[in-house]
Image (cartoon, rainbow, N blue to C red; front, side, top):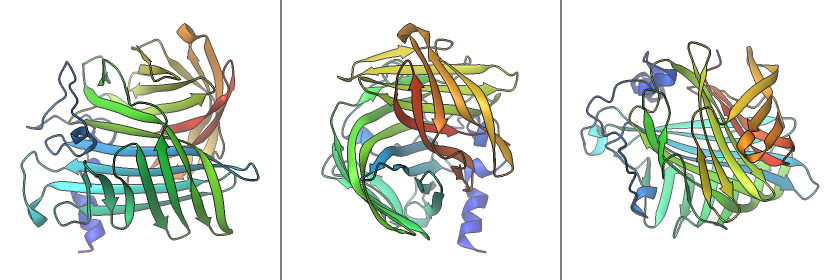
Amino acid sequence: MNARILLLLLWPFAVSAQGFAGLGTGTDGFSTPQQPAIFDFPADHGPHDDYRIEWWYLTANLTAEDGTPYGLQWTLFRSALTPDGGEGWSSPQLWMGHAAVTTPDAHFVTERLARGGIGQAGVTADPFEAWIDDWQLVGDDFDTLRMTASGPDFAYDMGLRAQGPLVFHGDAGYSVKSAQGQASYYYSQPFYDIEGTLTLPDGDVVVSGQAWLDREWSSQPLSDNQTGWDWFSLSFEDAKLMGFQLRQTDGTAYTSATWIDADGTTTPYTDGAFSAQPLSVSSVAGREIPTLWRVLLPDRDLDVIVQAINDQAWMDTSIPYWEGPVTVTGTHAGVGYLEMTGYE
Protein backbone atom coordinates (compact mmCIF):
# COMPACT_ATOMS: atom_id res chain seq x y z
CA MET A 1 0.00 0.00 0.00
CA ASN A 2 1.25 3.51 -0.81
CA ALA A 3 2.79 5.00 2.37
CA ARG A 4 0.89 8.27 1.89
CA ILE A 5 -2.44 6.44 1.71
CA LEU A 6 -1.55 4.35 4.76
CA LEU A 7 -0.67 7.45 6.75
CA LEU A 8 -3.92 9.14 5.82
CA LEU A 9 -5.82 6.04 6.95
CA LEU A 10 -4.04 6.21 10.29
CA TRP A 11 -4.22 9.99 10.72
CA PRO A 12 -6.67 10.62 13.59
CA PHE A 13 -8.19 13.70 11.99
CA ALA A 14 -9.01 11.96 8.74
CA VAL A 15 -11.27 9.38 10.32
CA SER A 16 -14.86 9.83 11.40
CA ALA A 17 -14.85 11.45 14.85
CA GLN A 18 -16.53 14.05 16.98
CA GLY A 19 -16.23 17.77 16.30
CA PHE A 20 -14.29 19.33 13.44
CA ALA A 21 -11.48 17.01 12.26
CA GLY A 22 -11.93 14.80 15.31
CA LEU A 23 -10.79 17.50 17.74
CA GLY A 24 -13.80 16.78 19.96
CA THR A 25 -12.82 13.14 20.45
CA GLY A 26 -12.42 11.92 24.05
CA THR A 27 -9.04 12.14 25.72
CA ASP A 28 -8.58 8.33 25.92
CA GLY A 29 -5.70 8.32 28.40
CA PHE A 30 -3.89 11.36 27.01
CA SER A 31 -2.87 14.23 29.28
CA THR A 32 -5.16 17.27 29.42
CA PRO A 33 -4.38 20.94 30.15
CA GLN A 34 -4.73 21.96 33.78
CA GLN A 35 -4.95 25.23 35.70
CA PRO A 36 -2.87 27.08 36.59
CA ALA A 37 -0.90 26.83 33.37
CA ILE A 38 2.79 26.37 34.19
CA PHE A 39 5.33 26.70 31.39
CA ASP A 40 8.97 25.62 31.30
CA PHE A 41 11.15 27.21 28.62
CA PRO A 42 12.91 26.32 26.45
CA ALA A 43 11.49 22.81 26.99
CA ASP A 44 7.93 23.86 26.09
CA HIS A 45 9.05 24.99 22.65
CA GLY A 46 9.51 21.26 22.03
CA PRO A 47 6.95 18.44 21.72
CA HIS A 48 4.55 17.13 24.38
CA ASP A 49 4.07 13.52 23.33
CA ASP A 50 1.57 12.73 26.07
CA TYR A 51 -0.97 15.11 24.46
CA ARG A 52 -2.93 14.04 21.38
CA ILE A 53 -2.42 17.11 19.16
CA GLU A 54 0.12 19.91 18.89
CA TRP A 55 1.33 22.48 16.37
CA TRP A 56 4.01 25.00 15.48
CA TYR A 57 2.16 27.46 13.26
CA LEU A 58 3.81 30.43 11.55
CA THR A 59 2.21 32.98 9.23
CA ALA A 60 3.76 36.13 7.78
CA ASN A 61 2.62 39.30 6.06
CA LEU A 62 5.31 40.30 3.55
CA THR A 63 5.94 43.15 1.13
CA ALA A 64 8.20 43.15 -1.92
CA GLU A 65 10.41 46.07 -2.90
CA ASP A 66 7.75 47.16 -5.43
CA GLY A 67 5.05 47.18 -2.74
CA THR A 68 3.33 43.93 -3.73
CA PRO A 69 1.86 42.12 -0.69
CA TYR A 70 2.51 38.44 -0.06
CA GLY A 71 1.51 35.92 2.59
CA LEU A 72 3.53 32.96 3.84
CA GLN A 73 2.68 29.93 5.96
CA TRP A 74 4.86 27.24 7.59
CA THR A 75 3.10 24.73 9.84
CA LEU A 76 4.12 21.50 11.54
CA PHE A 77 1.43 19.36 13.20
CA ARG A 78 2.09 16.47 15.58
CA SER A 79 -0.60 13.94 16.44
CA ALA A 80 -0.42 10.77 18.54
CA LEU A 81 -2.30 7.57 17.80
CA THR A 82 -2.04 6.46 21.44
CA PRO A 83 -0.68 7.95 24.69
CA ASP A 84 1.87 5.13 24.92
CA GLY A 85 5.48 5.62 23.87
CA GLY A 86 7.48 3.63 21.35
CA GLU A 87 10.74 3.67 19.43
CA GLY A 88 11.38 3.74 15.70
CA TRP A 89 8.48 2.53 13.57
CA SER A 90 6.55 1.64 16.73
CA SER A 91 6.34 5.33 17.68
CA PRO A 92 2.68 6.45 17.83
CA GLN A 93 3.60 9.98 16.67
CA LEU A 94 2.43 11.21 13.26
CA TRP A 95 3.56 14.45 11.62
CA MET A 96 2.03 16.68 8.94
CA GLY A 97 3.56 19.81 7.41
CA HIS A 98 1.87 22.55 5.40
CA ALA A 99 3.64 25.32 3.48
CA ALA A 100 2.07 28.03 1.35
CA VAL A 101 2.73 31.33 -0.37
CA THR A 102 -0.12 33.66 -1.29
CA THR A 103 0.14 36.47 -3.85
CA PRO A 104 -2.64 38.82 -5.00
CA ASP A 105 -3.16 36.52 -8.01
CA ALA A 106 -2.08 33.03 -6.95
CA HIS A 107 -1.94 30.63 -4.02
CA PHE A 108 0.78 27.96 -3.84
CA VAL A 109 0.41 25.15 -1.31
CA THR A 110 2.04 21.81 -0.55
CA GLU A 111 1.92 19.16 2.17
CA ARG A 112 4.28 16.64 3.76
CA LEU A 113 3.34 13.59 5.86
CA ALA A 114 5.67 11.57 8.08
CA ARG A 115 5.87 8.95 10.81
CA GLY A 116 7.64 9.79 14.04
CA GLY A 117 10.53 7.84 15.51
CA ILE A 118 12.52 7.40 12.29
CA GLY A 119 14.04 10.88 11.96
CA GLN A 120 11.82 12.04 9.11
CA ALA A 121 10.15 14.74 11.21
CA GLY A 122 10.34 16.12 14.72
CA VAL A 123 11.10 19.00 17.05
CA THR A 124 13.88 19.61 19.55
CA ALA A 125 13.72 22.47 22.05
CA ASP A 126 17.31 23.53 22.75
CA PRO A 127 18.68 24.43 20.31
CA PHE A 128 15.33 24.81 18.60
CA GLU A 129 14.77 22.73 15.49
CA ALA A 130 11.49 21.77 13.83
CA TRP A 131 11.59 19.80 10.59
CA ILE A 132 9.76 17.50 8.23
CA ASP A 133 11.91 16.09 5.45
CA ASP A 134 13.99 19.05 4.22
CA TRP A 135 11.67 21.76 5.54
CA GLN A 136 13.19 23.46 8.56
CA LEU A 137 12.46 26.06 11.23
CA VAL A 138 15.71 26.24 13.20
CA GLY A 139 17.78 28.51 15.43
CA ASP A 140 20.11 28.63 18.40
CA ASP A 141 17.06 29.80 20.35
CA PHE A 142 13.41 30.67 19.72
CA ASP A 143 14.17 34.38 19.09
CA THR A 144 16.33 34.00 15.99
CA LEU A 145 15.22 31.46 13.39
CA ARG A 146 15.75 30.41 9.80
CA MET A 147 12.79 28.96 7.93
CA THR A 148 12.82 27.01 4.67
CA ALA A 149 10.27 25.05 2.66
CA SER A 150 9.61 24.12 -0.94
CA GLY A 151 6.92 22.70 -3.15
CA PRO A 152 6.51 21.82 -6.83
CA ASP A 153 6.15 25.47 -7.87
CA PHE A 154 7.54 27.58 -5.00
CA ALA A 155 10.14 27.79 -2.27
CA TYR A 156 11.23 30.23 0.42
CA ASP A 157 14.23 30.91 2.61
CA MET A 158 13.53 33.38 5.43
CA GLY A 159 15.22 34.79 8.51
CA LEU A 160 13.25 35.77 11.62
CA ARG A 161 14.17 37.83 14.66
CA ALA A 162 11.84 38.41 17.63
CA GLN A 163 11.34 42.05 18.64
CA GLY A 164 9.13 41.42 21.66
CA PRO A 165 8.21 38.82 24.29
CA LEU A 166 6.12 35.67 24.13
CA VAL A 167 2.44 36.27 24.84
CA PHE A 168 0.02 33.88 26.57
CA HIS A 169 -3.64 33.55 25.65
CA GLY A 170 -6.63 32.94 27.87
CA ASP A 171 -5.78 32.57 31.55
CA ALA A 172 -1.97 32.89 31.40
CA GLY A 173 -1.78 30.33 28.58
CA TYR A 174 -4.78 28.17 29.51
CA SER A 175 -7.11 28.81 26.56
CA VAL A 176 -10.73 27.70 27.02
CA LYS A 177 -12.44 26.64 23.80
CA SER A 178 -16.02 25.79 24.81
CA ALA A 179 -18.72 26.31 27.40
CA GLN A 180 -18.11 22.68 28.41
CA GLY A 181 -14.56 23.57 29.39
CA GLN A 182 -12.40 22.05 26.65
CA ALA A 183 -9.07 23.86 26.60
CA SER A 184 -5.53 23.97 25.26
CA TYR A 185 -2.21 25.43 26.27
CA TYR A 186 -1.67 28.35 23.89
CA TYR A 187 1.09 30.93 23.54
CA SER A 188 2.46 32.98 20.65
CA GLN A 189 5.47 34.88 19.45
CA PRO A 190 3.73 37.64 17.41
CA PHE A 191 6.70 40.02 17.22
CA TYR A 192 8.98 38.52 14.57
CA ASP A 193 10.57 40.69 11.92
CA ILE A 194 11.04 38.53 8.83
CA GLU A 195 12.97 38.92 5.60
CA GLY A 196 14.22 36.68 2.84
CA THR A 197 13.50 35.38 -0.62
CA LEU A 198 10.43 33.79 -2.21
CA THR A 199 11.09 31.62 -5.26
CA LEU A 200 8.02 31.69 -7.52
CA PRO A 201 7.36 30.61 -11.12
CA ASP A 202 8.23 34.12 -12.36
CA GLY A 203 11.50 34.25 -10.38
CA ASP A 204 12.87 35.26 -7.00
CA VAL A 205 11.24 38.00 -4.93
CA VAL A 206 12.99 39.70 -2.01
CA VAL A 207 10.48 40.39 0.77
CA SER A 208 10.27 41.62 4.35
CA GLY A 209 7.55 42.07 6.93
CA GLN A 210 6.08 40.68 10.14
CA ALA A 211 5.53 37.08 11.25
CA TRP A 212 3.44 35.46 13.98
CA LEU A 213 4.10 31.99 15.43
CA ASP A 214 1.46 30.11 17.42
CA ARG A 215 2.18 27.20 19.77
CA GLU A 216 -0.70 25.10 21.00
CA TRP A 217 -1.22 21.62 22.41
CA SER A 218 -4.14 19.68 23.87
CA SER A 219 -5.88 16.31 23.74
CA GLN A 220 -9.49 17.46 23.26
CA PRO A 221 -9.46 21.16 22.29
CA LEU A 222 -13.05 21.25 20.98
CA SER A 223 -16.43 20.05 22.14
CA ASP A 224 -18.34 17.54 20.03
CA ASN A 225 -20.81 20.20 18.79
CA GLN A 226 -18.19 22.54 17.31
CA THR A 227 -17.95 22.34 13.54
CA GLY A 228 -15.05 24.69 12.72
CA TRP A 229 -13.48 28.03 13.49
CA ASP A 230 -12.64 31.48 12.15
CA TRP A 231 -9.29 32.66 13.58
CA PHE A 232 -7.81 36.13 13.16
CA SER A 233 -4.31 37.41 13.93
CA LEU A 234 -4.25 41.15 13.26
CA SER A 235 -1.36 43.59 13.59
CA PHE A 236 -1.98 47.33 13.93
CA GLU A 237 0.50 50.18 14.27
CA ASP A 238 0.57 50.10 18.08
CA ALA A 239 -1.11 46.81 19.07
CA LYS A 240 -2.11 43.32 17.95
CA LEU A 241 -5.23 41.19 18.28
CA MET A 242 -5.77 37.45 18.31
CA GLY A 243 -9.41 36.47 18.15
CA PHE A 244 -11.38 33.38 17.21
CA GLN A 245 -14.91 32.09 17.07
CA LEU A 246 -15.75 28.40 17.21
CA ARG A 247 -18.93 27.74 15.26
CA GLN A 248 -21.46 25.39 16.87
CA THR A 249 -24.18 23.16 15.51
CA ASP A 250 -26.96 25.34 16.99
CA GLY A 251 -25.79 28.38 14.98
CA THR A 252 -24.05 30.14 17.88
CA ALA A 253 -20.32 30.60 18.37
CA TYR A 254 -17.90 30.45 21.28
CA THR A 255 -15.39 33.31 21.16
CA SER A 256 -12.11 34.30 22.74
CA ALA A 257 -9.60 37.08 22.12
CA THR A 258 -6.33 38.56 23.33
CA TRP A 259 -5.40 42.21 22.99
CA ILE A 260 -1.61 42.63 22.79
CA ASP A 261 -0.02 46.01 23.49
CA ALA A 262 3.20 47.06 21.76
CA ASP A 263 5.27 46.06 24.82
CA GLY A 264 3.68 42.59 24.96
CA THR A 265 1.21 43.33 27.77
CA THR A 266 -1.93 41.26 27.18
CA THR A 267 -5.60 41.62 28.03
CA PRO A 268 -7.68 38.44 27.63
CA TYR A 269 -11.33 38.51 26.59
CA THR A 270 -13.71 35.65 27.32
CA ASP A 271 -16.74 34.42 25.41
CA GLY A 272 -18.92 37.18 23.95
CA ALA A 273 -16.51 40.12 24.07
CA PHE A 274 -15.16 39.57 20.53
CA SER A 275 -17.29 39.08 17.44
CA ALA A 276 -16.70 38.42 13.76
CA GLN A 277 -19.48 38.93 11.24
CA PRO A 278 -19.17 37.69 7.63
CA LEU A 279 -20.11 40.39 5.13
CA SER A 280 -19.68 38.59 1.81
CA VAL A 281 -18.64 35.20 0.48
CA SER A 282 -16.49 33.97 -2.38
CA SER A 283 -16.80 30.77 -4.38
CA VAL A 284 -13.69 28.80 -3.40
CA ALA A 285 -13.04 25.17 -4.36
CA GLY A 286 -16.76 24.55 -4.77
CA ARG A 287 -17.58 26.10 -1.39
CA GLU A 288 -19.01 29.41 -0.27
CA ILE A 289 -16.32 30.94 1.96
CA PRO A 290 -16.64 34.30 3.80
CA THR A 291 -13.64 36.41 2.73
CA LEU A 292 -14.86 39.83 3.90
CA TRP A 293 -15.52 40.27 7.64
CA ARG A 294 -16.48 42.89 10.20
CA VAL A 295 -14.54 42.31 13.43
CA LEU A 296 -15.50 44.05 16.67
CA LEU A 297 -13.97 44.33 20.11
CA PRO A 298 -16.04 47.09 21.78
CA ASP A 299 -13.87 47.26 24.90
CA ARG A 300 -11.04 48.54 22.67
CA ASP A 301 -13.29 50.64 20.41
CA LEU A 302 -12.28 48.33 17.60
CA ASP A 303 -14.57 48.09 14.57
CA VAL A 304 -12.70 46.96 11.47
CA ILE A 305 -13.18 45.43 8.05
CA VAL A 306 -10.96 42.41 7.36
CA GLN A 307 -10.54 41.57 3.67
CA ALA A 308 -8.64 38.74 2.02
CA ILE A 309 -5.77 39.77 -0.25
CA ASN A 310 -6.60 36.74 -2.40
CA ASP A 311 -9.99 35.15 -1.78
CA GLN A 312 -8.82 31.87 -3.37
CA ALA A 313 -6.31 31.00 -0.62
CA TRP A 314 -7.61 27.46 -0.25
CA MET A 315 -5.39 24.86 1.42
CA ASP A 316 -6.09 21.79 -0.71
CA THR A 317 -4.51 19.44 1.82
CA SER A 318 -5.56 16.21 3.54
CA ILE A 319 -7.80 18.26 5.80
CA PRO A 320 -8.78 21.23 3.58
CA TYR A 321 -9.24 24.74 4.95
CA TRP A 322 -8.85 28.41 4.00
CA GLU A 323 -5.76 30.33 5.13
CA GLY A 324 -4.44 33.61 3.80
CA PRO A 325 -3.24 37.18 4.39
CA VAL A 326 -5.71 40.01 4.98
CA THR A 327 -5.84 43.78 5.14
CA VAL A 328 -7.53 45.67 7.97
CA THR A 329 -9.32 49.02 7.69
CA GLY A 330 -11.66 50.99 9.96
CA THR A 331 -10.98 52.23 13.46
CA HIS A 332 -7.61 50.44 13.26
CA ALA A 333 -5.52 49.82 10.15
CA GLY A 334 -3.10 47.00 9.55
CA VAL A 335 -2.52 43.54 8.14
CA GLY A 336 -2.99 40.03 9.40
CA TYR A 337 -3.92 36.44 8.71
CA LEU A 338 -7.26 34.62 8.62
CA GLU A 339 -7.84 30.88 9.00
CA MET A 340 -11.24 29.27 8.43
CA THR A 341 -12.04 25.60 8.89
CA GLY A 342 -15.11 23.40 8.64
CA TYR A 343 -16.69 24.93 5.53
CA GLU A 344 -18.23 22.10 3.53
